[in-house]
Amino acid sequence: MFLDERSFTLSISRIEPKGFGCNGVNPEAKPKLKRFLRESNCALAVSLNATTDEVRNWVMPINRKYNLSLLLQTLREELRSKHNYKVLFEYVMLVGVNDSLEDARRLIDLVQGIPCKVNLISFNPHCGSQFKPTSEEKITEFRNILAEAGCIVFLRPNRGDDQMAACGQLGKPGQVQAPLLRVPAKFQSAPT
Image 1 (cartoon, rainbow, N blue to C red):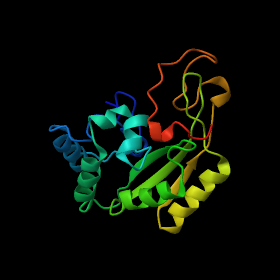
Image 2 (image 1 turned 180 degrees about the vertical axis):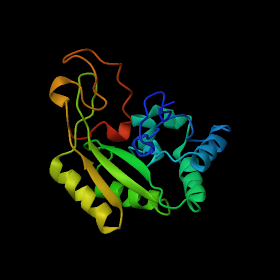
Image 3 (image 1 turned 90 degrees about the vertical axis):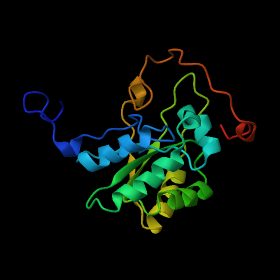
């Protein structure tokens, strides 16, 4: 529909499906992802946001149902034969949660063998969230580790956070957000 000349007529390079139920261990997921990669020229964006299942289960509860390991393996297999194609891995930086130098090294290992770009995103704080954004200096250090390992890395600039209109933040300033997720014991002393 987005590509049809009678509709939006967007460029195929501007369409980037993300989180459309094709990741994880769902029995139908792997065939859907394979079909998408084989039949579509659209780019694929994957919200990674963590380098371990423990953290990803916390920051993205869908990980409990749809584990990322099958997605990564499927991407490795399918993209061997697809030339000039890169997956965009999105990684929201959360202070004390997923921004350690060890996380950077694990991220390098996770994306190994997958043609990709990594988009590091500063978290946009809002009421109702216990997460805090990683400092610019730490994000730069994280990026440098990835870049030195040969990863293509982007830093997404913040836009709209002063109006509660930034990525992951839509709402009125001060508006009560969804209930907080239970913080795993390991992270209860995370820096604030």
